[in-house]
Image 1 (tube, rainbow, N blue to C red):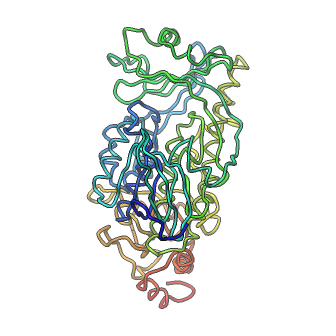
Image 2: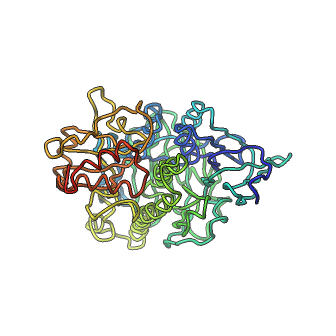
Image 3: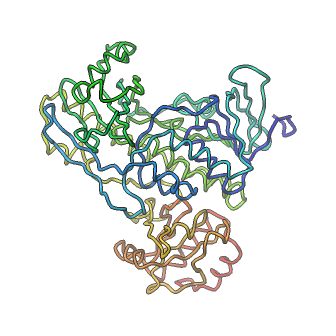
Length: 518
């Protein structure tokens, strides 16, 4: 399609889908001043709960887009997960730390998705360059000389509209209209079951239900209990393959299932819905200037609570790369690292969720559980596993590469990420590596590719534990490269230039550094 094709609006990025993944991407790009159009087929946000878990990595991303402080008060710190048998006897305890962790946030939170969506949508009011158009269905994506032309039709009829964008990102869920433009193929992880999900609002707090997530390893009726925020509680029940979905959602049938825990006078049903828990991932996440993220790219069973978390990690990974490419600070090829890094990472979490689901089911089929199986072998998931990113921008084989760098609290109690939001950072041990002209800078210095140098006793201790004198951290907080000795510190900075265009200030610095060190 020629560049001169008439369109109603031109943008740097078009985002298809206005759920939490699409809205968070719009916030991330809006902060850079890019023109963004968000297209959503529904006219209003979905008002009922869906995702209920978020972790420290995702809170760190919400911090990066300046919304964590508004969101955190709506959350409940999650104490973890317990496994019990049909009689309520504890089989295994997977409690989560209750103190703030190395990323500057708690390991696990419960939240109400409409609260998050309200905050994300309100956040877009900060950015005059972001335009949201609800009640429009994307019916076509065509390539043009400068990017993508999107054809849209109003959901309830009316004149079709057309938008052009340099890039288009489908954040439009499991039934994505964007994904077919990239490719129809999936990797299937072999888990496909129907479960009844029931959301209840209690009339008053019931301490007997507890705050832990509880996996009921009942051989006759496997179930999950989830404590939500406030008086919200959720139960999930595995259904027989022959069960009638409509009948299972009838209130009398639902209350009969809940009777083990709850009386009809103790709460109100908010929702009862049958979901098919799938485990699959799109083989391709990018085709030219069209990309996908969130459920459009992957679906996981909910047992690890990583569905939305995976989508927000997609956005954290993609947004800074898109920003650099749009700014001219990196070639378009940088976007190839998005799927390369994210796909193996998502696959690992899906594998863990499937293993947990099969473990619960196996427990039910075996009629008896061996607690040791919850601590080793198939259930290695009962530990704090944080898999690394897949092959992409990382250099070397050090275990810190591709994993989150720590975040510490500064003197004013803000997180140290504030020093390099939207930028690269060098974590350095001042006793091992001279200043080299890189100094601490605040975010007011603006977004560019010049790294800032961050020193802190806690970070020096982390570097020492890792056997490092320095680490290069990307704008998404992930470790990209490391220096094991002062002699290799300068080389780490040089390698950054292989991926992004370095400012002249850093280029001049590197020309005066000796080849074998600073």
